[in-house]
Length: 71
Figure 1 (cartoon, rainbow, N blue to C red):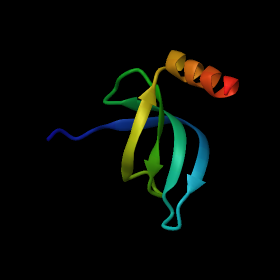
Figure 2: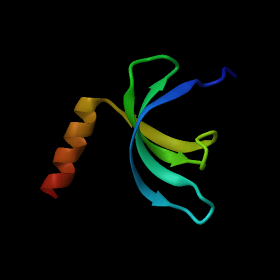
Figure 3: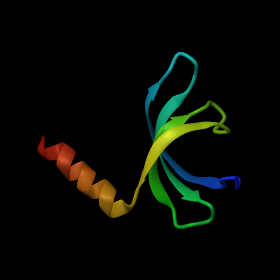
Figure 4: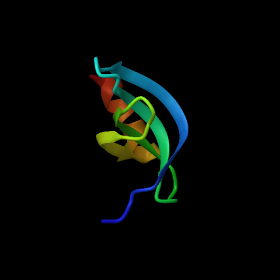
């Protein structure tokens, strides 16, 4: 299996933190050298390990924001 490469371009915010120190974060990340996307997932303290998450384009993030603001 190929290694996944990532670069955290910008840390946008922390939504929560577990007792074990893992944090659910919203970041702007470039995956495997591609154009950065907004990413929501759990990270270990040093960003070396990650949980499952979702990635969104800027348009998708704006649509999600609109949905959340209307409900």
